[in-house]
Image (cartoon, rainbow, N blue to C red; front, side, top):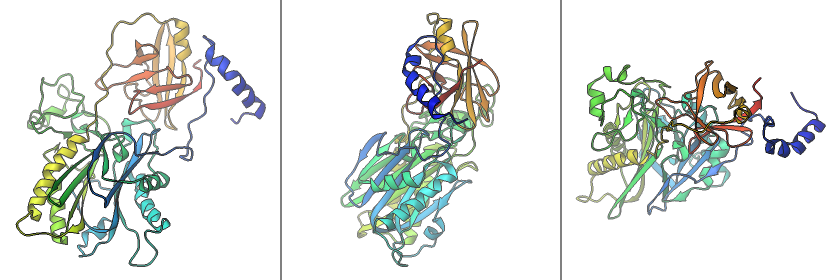
Length: 466
């Protein structure tokens, strides 16, 4: 209910004293915004920079850290030729039909990758309209801005809200694009990607890139890795995975694949979570290529990705790969032909897949902790709202702290409509044991931060638990 001006003024006046006084209930925090109007774009931030010399290729990233979710924009100084290869069973793309026509013309200005599932598709058209608004393109039929785009699914149980990359974020990322700088890891469209749901790994992934120059020839590859399958090192070991307790030590992808379907069952693994995943990728070369060569490049590199992701391009993936030629240098016989370019790019793409994997959150270590005064535990009690569909209720009973998720889904290891004990692991920190990390941080007054760190989810205190 809306509060009166006097009530609001008294709350603001008394808030510092109430927060500072031990034993007092926390002051109600504002309700999380249901719209995205107050979100602030974070531009060209996060991950580890990959730098290379290519003035024509500019890259910008943007994120809403509240999600977290983001967008990555690749733009070119002039129109380029492009082809597309779609392998996954659940793609969501923009302008792929135009790229499939195989015209020997340069029609495209940008490639846009984003989170937010189908809602993130507006980022692609937003970049196109920014190109027009900024005067780079016009309304003439031969100057229409055309952007290619694809999205990944970054909702489900990986986060507790449904913030998505929108027009404002995409245009900010495009306008801040820099030549020859790409951010590997949890940045841009890869801000909240995950991998390995097929085997229950539920590991964090991200976006990855790799670059190679041979004489004047330049090849760059980029991927936003959000696959249903697992990311695999070149030695066959899993690059990232929260292993099931029943798995053999030093497990490899061959162990998992050779033991299907048993390797997905209880005692091997307990697959859970959304079956909507996607890996979206881009190959850029500066050598002139005709439409047939460019299409074959897209197919060849996309096929190669099944080595670094297993299984790849399932019914639950929306995998799409774009191949772009900037046409800056002529193809010279006897130097590097299109098939060799495809082989080099394929090897680079495996590097890009591996470069996408960031350091994983560690599982909390449950050890004996000093007893916490009941008064302090009671101060953590309350309802913490993460979104319109997830609230975590925290309560104290007999000197112990408990949590329960309400709404439409559970909150990581905190079950839906069931109470679970929260075990202390540090000052103001509690954990729920399980296969995946679940840490609750009460150290910021008025908030509950779940899994503090790079992929944190923040709930705001609504009211005391009676």
